[in-house]
Length: 581
Image 1 (tube, rainbow, N blue to C red):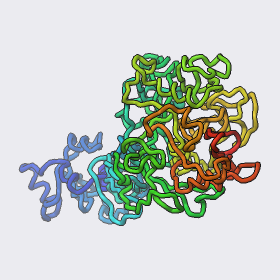
Image 2: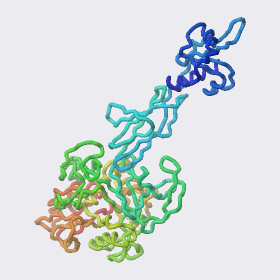
Image 3: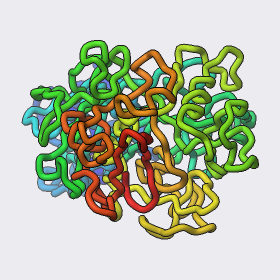
Image 4: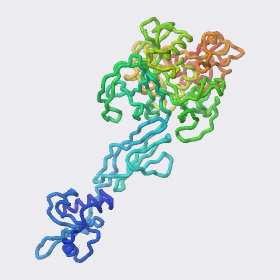
């Protein structure tokens, strides 16, 4: 009887009244009189019949008795009874005064995971562990700041709005546990022919082919900053199916990259806001970012803000690199239509012959490569760099790309587009210990390198992009970002001042490929030309700098160089060593 009572107590703690009602069987007709007598003439309503086999079904073994059980009052009655000292006993003595120890006061445990599918995501509740005898629970969730909980059936929550979500698991005994998870929705990367999605697996210290629809290819949330990466087909080789561990230690089957193709990183369409305290100063601040849906100006977090699309502190601007320049006469480096995002080279460009002088030199006979741990392509003029960038989509190219990819030399607006996302919680600034991209100090101009600190000076020894300090030189503080934004070789952009010699050097008719800046009356004065473009936004020049003053010329955020062109010195140089931008 003690064994049965113990199990009854466990079942009451474990199951709902509806589930308890399904246990046992109705009292058989030939047992009704025995049950009635055992209850001393009281009603049998609420009692369920159990024999040896039915007791086994509820986990009581080795007991060959017939009992009736009322789970509501935890009463166990042996209908045949046992005679003891002239009395017929049917119950455990003092059963109604038994004090049961509640073994189910400890809350359940679980972990949260998420899958990202562009403008939709799923939060899953995994590795659930109930305590005591509880085996079931209910899941509720709410967006942080909301008051009402929403209950779901199952363990997967569909998400259509960016934000931080609170998830609560309540077991059948009433114990609850809660956790939070950030979900950031952003436009799904556009895949052209020749583009192969990849993810980095720490267990292999290698890239693995990703399923573009699998949900773990990218995650732009601040807790992950896992920007989407692809490799092109130039030189890409992979092993057959192998077992790998994902970030949650789940065994997956994947294809390991044994030789990389040129790598690019997806920047989804977004709007940004530079705090007024940091606007047009040399004091760095966090840039606020809202990712946008499709080609619209609708934020994925469901909020509405006044869009200014103008240079100014606290202004919300849709970054011009994603916008239609036909509406603005390409005043801020726009494209020829509204777009959902842009693929940007992951490393400084190298050439198909990196052992050549300057890693390639001034020629259009070589192909662009975008790889880590390779000598970067130097000694090349702006127009030549422009030409080889456009050649990447020529018919029969080595990358497998179609003309839809529209490859081109990066513009100032696009360089600023990467820099602004870097300076947000979705990029390097989330690394509280550092909060800035580390310099690539390698004196041999090896791509994707980092030193021993943010401002390590020129050295021939440095860390590779995926080792030790290497990820600190990434825009995300991990291997998923863009490298060589600081240090390495200088980066020229497709930009020039009106009426400068650059106009003749870039033989381009389509304005979407070139940023054209206003030239002041004092054509040879850099600061005057800088001031003449004060209304321009998105390019990480006027908005994040006070301009070129004095010989030090370090008037941008993080003490970086702030250069500007003249009528004769027309090149825009980005990524100079020591400093951020």
